[in-house]
Amino acid sequence: MAKYGHEQLHFFQHRGTKLKAIVAIHDTTLGPALGGCRMRPYETEEDALFDVLRLSRGMTYKCGVADVDNGGGKSVIIGDPNTDKSPEMFRAFGRFVGSLGGRFYTGTDMGTTPMDFVHASREAQHGGFVGLPEEYGGSGNTAIPTALGVYQGIRATAKVLWGHEDLTGKRFAVQGVGKVGALTVERLVAAGAQVYITDVYQPFVDALVAKVPPVQMLGVVAPDEIYGLDVDMFVPCALGAIVNDETIPQFKCKAIVGSANNQLLDMEKHGKMLHEKGILYAPDYLVNAGGLIQVADELKGYVEARVMAKTNSIYEMLLQVYALSTEQNIPTWLAADRLVEERIARVEDLKSMFSL
Image (cartoon, rainbow, N blue to C red; front, side, top):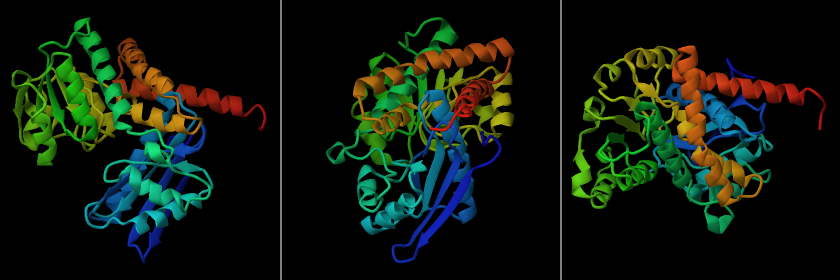
């Protein structure tokens, strides 16, 4: 297993469409690499590289914990999705991914949409794209199973904290109310919870405020105020690296459970700090695995009931992580990593028997 490094790193540029992209393939022990494509106006290429390396490693562990037959990879496109994007850019990107010969599959992430990959798939003769719109043969909106997985993670965490899953009157601070965050809030409200919300994009906030009963909307706060609220759980559903030296002293929550990728800026350091502070941390790559489970299922013939059943099992998987963390007195991120590494080692051993 490429635990400490990546198998492949690809840089691609197409001047005609202003495409600058990176694909990182971390590990393919379990199967072809799978991970989304993020488009952001990174300030430097070094920032983009840092992001894609962290995200692709996380995908290896997400695939492992979700028990799908894929390894970890990720792609990033350097550019502003609101001003730089074009169909031709994604067709160029499709040629790039197609040239990898099926070693890497990608789809939507921050800054990209299913239609972007409809354009890309027109140029990829060897495949490489998942999560297309249903009318183009895809499985539809991945935010639905992702939010379900977050909700199951919250239920499992409630079980550990309070011995039951009743969320009535419990207080949540939700950071980011885009596709996944908004659906998560709707589930929390339906379960009787109360919420604070924040987002840098005001239309997302306005749309959600219109849906949530006033008695359950504790308030809309500024982005930098969300960390210090007196709540039961903090639910990060936006950018990663938000658990760090500056935010940890602010937390008053009992647990952190959310969909954002790579929430811990430094896994070892900040995971240990949360553990010592007594804040229960639900490893993000397990909690947000619902979308991955859906797109991975496309590769063998999408069955919605199978995807939802597997996503619901995040509840039991997280309880296993919490139990191992308690048993060995180790941070939860380390407990999750150990469970995944054991599975990958077993699969690697099986593959050594003979070649197919």
